[in-house]
Image (tube, rainbow, N blue to C red; front, top):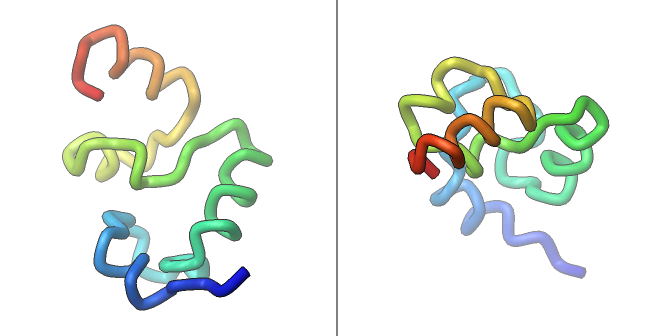
Length: 67
């Protein structure tokens, strides 16, 4: 499968600047799932900035209808 890194970067809202996985969605998802997290693109910008990417945080946002 061909990676579309440049196209992915246009949609990536990750604010963690030293991240080596930006634009590499397969690597990003695999990395976060190992830690029971979701990648930045699953969160609204203001919530992504908290760096709490846990499943629990995402569930709270769903319950509050913010996602």
